[in-house]
Length: 365
Ligand SMILES: *Cc1c(COP(=O)(O)O)cnc(C)c1O
Picture 1 (cartoon, rainbow, N blue to C red):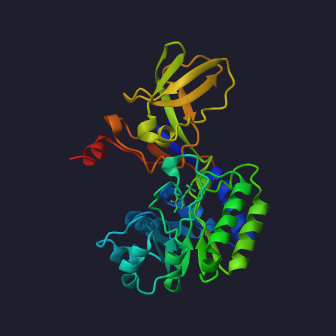
Picture 2 (cartoon, protein in one colour):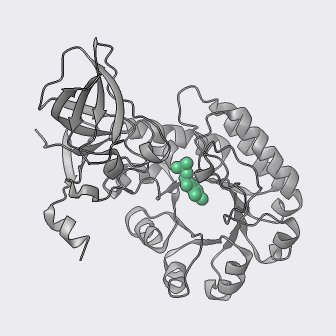
Picture 3 (cartoon, helix red, strand yellow):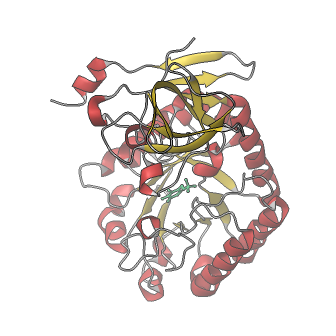
């Protein structure tokens, strides 16, 4: 048995999402790029490559990872490129997207003949959390002002607009896109591509895929552009679990189980967005709060029900552990970092990375 803790990426589940992505590529005519900031576990890129057109990035390192490990089209984007990075960024990318007109003007000549884009910020979004809302007050994410954008539009090949966030509601997506069209109508038709970013939950069960594809196709035709999508979460939702073992149990008004992992170190977004993880699907009579092993008082994964009382050594699968987990894991409390394992299409499980005390030491000095 593989020692816990470890992330387990299920290729069969991933393939189901990738087949939906293929459907969107075919019926919407959209190109689809993996957002590496959400998921960059390159051991499964071989499965993903035939179903996605490439990667998009938030930094020089992601650009290089995308180029080296994924291939296809490599889009470069960063909230701000540094002067010492730009040469390498340009070498490794196929398109470069600037966050501001000032970054565009500073680096335009260094980008040579690589297609150039600008991030637009329409000032509207569907994010429920201010922290993750690109349209928040005084946002630094992209240019809003039409006149300012028009001043450079002749030198742009495309734009990127990322203003959806875990948006499961097609009507909301449709309405937001219509507002973008109304606001930037005189800009869009002068471009050859528009990336609509990520944050659209189109791989979720029940999402109206046909209407989504039709809407994207209509957008592309109306403005004469190639549409790109940049799904992170939608690519990996429901594909990965965090496998943990019970280290201790107790009762303090409710049943508690402490496991050999931690939200803060291994599934940080649960804390940031105040969510709980789906844990098992048991409906048994024994309810437990599943807790992490760091000293953080609120290090709690969530609630789960079991048929039998939990015992030390029992294994638990924590769901939805694919997006924004492995890319964010850290050494808080010096606890053991989960290994990464892959469940192949034939059901066999292969450990692809383990971490040790030396990795902890080498992350510090
Ligand atoms: C975060 C981000 C994505 C991916 O978002 P998901 O919600 O994971 O789909 C795509 N594009 C940009 C510009 C982003 O900032």
